[in-house]
Amino acid sequence: MSEINAKVVIITGASSGLGEATAHRLARGGAKLVLAARREERLKALTDQINEQGGDAIYRVTDVTKREQVEDLAQAARDTYGRIDVLINNAGVMPLSPLNRLKVDEWEQMVDVNIKGVMYGIAAVLPTMRDQHSGHVINLSSVAGHVVFPAAAIYCATKFAVKALSEGLRQESNGEIRSTNISPGAIATELTTTISDDKTAQGVNELYEMAIDADAIARAIAFAIEQPADVDVNELIIRPTQQQL
Ligand SMILES: NC(=O)C1=CN([C@@H]2O[C@H](COP(=O)(O)OP(=O)(O)OC[C@H]3O[C@@H](n4cnc5c(N)ncnc54)[C@H](OP(=O)(O)O)[C@@H]3O)[C@@H](O)[C@H]2O)C=CC1
Ligand SMILES: O=CCS(=O)(=O)O
Image (cartoon, rainbow, N blue to C red; front, top):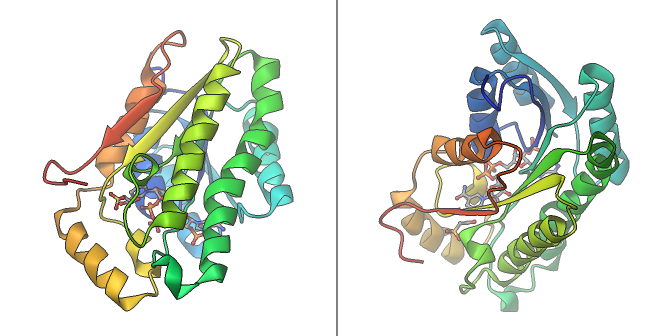
């Protein structure tokens, strides 16, 4: 039996990009999926598609910046499937800009979604995973969680924080809970569309001409999940072969 088959997996940010690609891949592996994001139409269409193709998925509209909504999401997984095997903290935003543009609202949005959303996710599943004596938290950091580059100070700060959360969880896991930090480079998704600074958007769009398909990350996530319980894949960096950064 595949180590993905029948696992109960929560995916945040499942309405597009990496989350959506991961949902399709894990559904094909037999996972039971609990899909979350804010855009209900997209979530419903994805859930219907997976179920029509013989998979097993439910969805909950969830804003990860709202702690109680993330708790409700974890409760939905327990109510429907009785356990939580994997949480994929994938929801994230990347409105890049130089610090001197003082786009403080966007800074706060990045902190709220990229850091606090991940914290709320961990808080929502940790007691269940402790009770089960097993579980796996997969956090989406970034190449920007390893290197800092201009116009990305706040985004990088959030992704360094995600990396720290992944490592802290690993060290405190008591040999029961696996922790995987996934660090993608340029991947073709909607992530770059929220950049409101024109000059930054232009530079990022040039970088993303080399972007690779979201399934590259879905495959990496599946690889981490399908390892035996005593194997913890802690860190994966996946870039386009052409990417220098
Ligand atoms: N694409 C890339 O090149 C890279 C991506 N990453 C990371 O991968 C993750 C996924 O991004 P990607 O798929 O590329 O981008 P997308 O923009 O395609 O997807 C982002 C997802 O996050 C969700 N989201 C945003 N804000 C919230 C919120 N407040 N509450 C719940 N969900 C939210 C969106 O759903 P909705 O709007 O419906 O809520 C959407 O499903 C992010 O953490 C990103 O930082 C890391 C490195 C590179
Ligand atoms: O998160 C974004 C990936 S990159 O642009 O830093 O490579």
